[in-house]
View 1 (cartoon, rainbow, N blue to C red):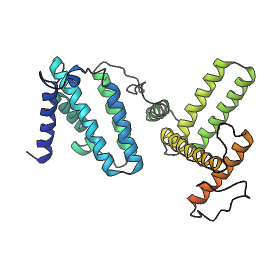
View 2 (cartoon, rainbow, N blue to C red):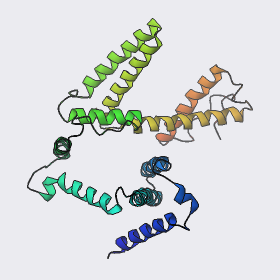
View 3 (cartoon, one colour):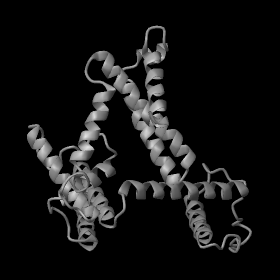
View 4 (cartoon, rainbow, N blue to C red):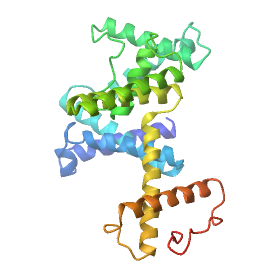
Length: 284
């Protein structure tokens, strides 16, 4: 056995012990449903470690995800529904079956060719299993909305239902924005909600055509918002002004200054911007 196999076997035995009579009361009380949220949370923590480029945190968080897999498999074994061996055998078979260009005689020289083959094989699997045969099948509704829109667009694109390029999607974005403006003028809340949803879906498609993920792009925008907001809070504190009592005009003024400071930092000119008079001290 390799060291990895030994350690994996040890993890399985640890979980068996925790779930056994006389084990951990908390672990023994859990169900698939009760720990479902932990699996989702751990997956997000893996994503955060990747975004931060933190290899040590990634190592730890991948371990937490692996624990969740073993935990669910152990509960299933106890219930007699399936075993960890079944889980591993299934993914092994699927990976070989969906990579015929590696394990078989098919050819695929580009990532796009691989994706097209993957989509075709999945469709054949659904047909054989008499399950949902739609091209769009397999996209969980529980995904974050922007990520779900991205995956739906990807799947539709595999059969040619897509815009030609990013410029064509941008035209659609303008069209959806105009429809949203019309809905706002009509003061129809339901129509505005629908048009806003269409606009967000179009923006997710635009991100996809730019080889970006709308979810990641929005996360970075939220990070910038937080950084600028905290910067303004520091400038207000330096002036002895409570953020709750600052006027909208002052917020707007300092917000623009925070954006300038951010731009200067990004361009390497930190410290070279001068405050715009004594009434605009630099953030600490």
